[in-house]
Image 1: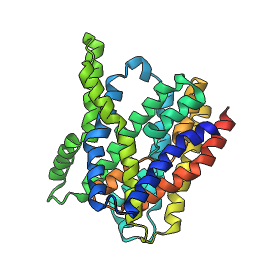
Image 2: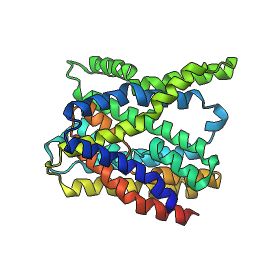
Image 3: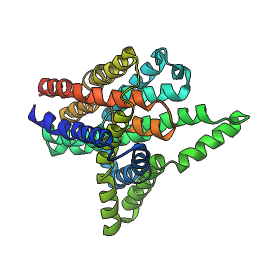
Length: 317
């Protein structure tokens, strides 16, 4: 229980601090947009780049783990997508359903999952935790961006739309940075090349700032949208899918379908059971969609995960 509290408290605390400084007028609406852009364009790309640049093929050669976690996340995303977004006008837009899908399936792997799994299962869970983080960014996050871009581009033909989407993806720092990291990892395997120490420390410093800035931004937005009315059924559906359905699917795949080391199976389930991460909120703000729903889903799932994840860790042993 202490390990879970130690991981959840800083997350909730940063959101609360953001809420307080916004309510007191220390930081305003302009700060919300600026902090979000900083995370999207600098901090998070640096974190993804560094993680990918240090991964070797031997470390990622666990197809059962990759399959269980990926299918669990994608299945939950698709289930949320099919169920829709309630009576909101935005519920019929592809972009908003995609962000809702992320709210139901995007685990807070990088900022909460890695320290939590290390505390609960030891240093051996670091590699599978990093793999889960990469899957979230490069599969789930990228797929949602594709759907959002398709919905928001207003071009005369599908060919023009596809070209614009591909160009947008290549320019997106959250997609480009892990791809560059893969190139560095491949170069390391072929030639022994390693990142120069100044570059490594630069990306490390930037990456370390991604989590606190993103969480404070959520608190800022919560304070600014406290009067927004939301459908409780929408929030209940998103949080239920995230904290119950996704870990259940992942558990069945990791323990009943594919054989893998016990440590990897436990890590897959815990990573799937984590609350909603800050990625969906970044996209909601970046594309000017309904960020109020996303911020509530992150906050409620984070608070409730203190109980659900604690029970799950105790049950897994």
